[in-house]
Length: 230
Length: 119
Image (tube, rainbow over all chains, first blue to last red; front, side):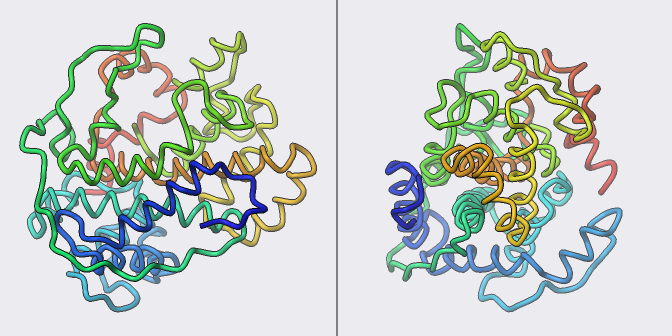
């Protein structure tokens, strides 16, 4: 997916190519064509006039209207994608509750996984001056409709992957942090997102030219910019 | 918290408040370059990034410049997973970071507080 002259690992290159392939194929609640449309809408959200007006408002709920562009996806899904792409720091439980009156929590989780995986790929491409990669052709097939029936309510908006309270010996971090559990309602969503994310970062012994503390500094700065509490 | 933990592992001390206050010195090597690249990438300011990338490559090297963007792009995705799913802090992290969250202003990002502000 990237030109050979860029100093990126083979693992990252392969992971992104695999993510693109996975997104273009049927998921558990959406077809490949619908999943690719989510990526297209996510790109269209950058520069959307309604999103820009909302970002300038004290509350995004103060401004109503229609998002730029057209889509074959339901308006609730379009709204969800625009908000996740352009204003993630001001998503709230009441917004989530409203959204999931129209779509199931399982479908919601799949959308989050597709959009956020594409955000990683598009951000890196753009950051390296490559422009966003072309979308592949969709792969036909039936949606799987699989989800994790053992997911648990654990204080998040969505049911999480069940996990014990064990912590790692050295850092007192949980063996399975909540961020790993977040998409656990839909196993294919976990696989897509973390398959994309994993070559970028590890909690310790990071395999990049920058140090762990430099990586944490960057991560913390992104979290602050996106107003991410976690 | 992870930045603080890295500092302990590296026998270094980092100023956590520098995350939300760019006027403060962080103590992290090349922090000003890492910050500039990260902020341009997360703001989708591709023109600025195209302008500063060669300058920063000269200062810290091409590989470190690219790897900074590799990490920033990953967190541009994963912060959205956290924000869209409303996951709580892990219990021990929540306990260990009460003062840190208040000092840095991160507490105002807490999801219930956001709901109070934005509805």
